[in-house]
Length: 413
Image (cartoon, rainbow, N blue to C red; front, side, top):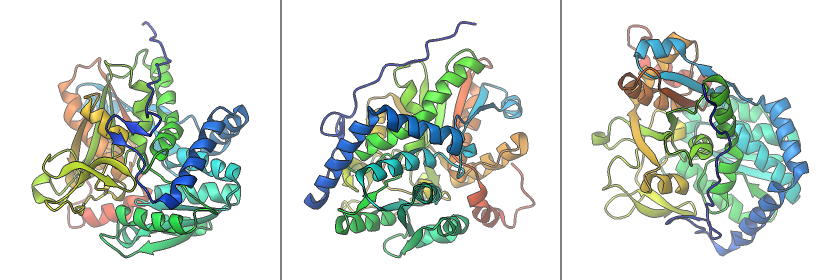
């Protein structure tokens, strides 16, 4: 079997102003422009600093547990009867999700900038846990903003953050979810910008955050590319990942963007179904997802007829967000990536099937990607390969899963 080349070209995005085509930019108060410029300059300096890169990779190897493996899902592949399915196991990274990749990188940047305090937002709690972990490791003060609704459905992660020494501040405004946590974190940053670094957790926000988060998460795709070539002898025909703000998906997509034969599929949160209006599928209805500005960046935003930000719903806290990272908007509009959705029920069923066939309990976010593969794999030839980015493990979701399945006759797929 011929081994394909393993080093793709690098597309020159974003441009010098922080745009991915029409998306991106820096829409923030003047008071934090100097901080963004400092972050950008620090990042470009450290990106080319072999000592920084060596320290980060040493931590990934000895602390994060990288490289995470690619696992062949044999029983799931046989059950679905089509394409062969592989899992990129970010659930096996320290703290249980991909979020640690970016948190460690930005925490090291914080230390280099001489700042002693970090703030962050979190929805599912995994970014909060990862940030608290990195700050504990490096001795940095840590404050996490989290919506009250998310705190209730992610109690184990709230406890983990506090156990790690972070202060968790509940947000009672708006829908009390991720959007509102970001609002409060932004307010804190404006007030304390000289002493504080905002360790943003997803591939959104003002430039340079989407680029920085993508680059720190791109280790997922770099590893997966080499692993697929070594284990399977070719690149995957399709890569599937869930998309909230978009850090895990852009992290795995990035290394394959120049490989036109590799399909890139992002799966949004379909919630209770598109017709119900209770979802976070930005691209499912062109009448509600329109160009707008949210949290410092220009992208597609779910808006009502008056232009007000719509409330969203998902069983998975990490996908419960009304906008999407600017690079994903660019990939969608250029046709390089396709975006679809899975409902809450489909994600629950996919989670159960993966657990019972492969012994892996995925995060509810990741289960959305599994749900899409359950639909697609049977329609594909048996020599095709699908790679799922299993972005996190489901420990944090057990209370939500138990509640959602209450009254059913046992757990079944």
